[in-house]
Image (cartoon, rainbow, N blue to C red; front, side, top):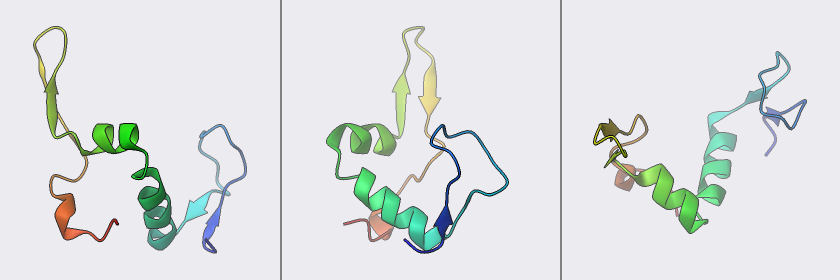
Length: 68
């Protein structure tokens, strides 16, 4: 990764943070190797304990992206 800079490890926003889409994709590809993360990230919807339907705000069709 050559187009990414983080100035803290807390995840809190900072003006000096930046990342290219290519670098974000590298991070996502790595994260998707973790089965727990992959299951969580690719879940389209679920029902919470109060029987409310929660829909994903991320990709609904990951098949069109080269994530392997």
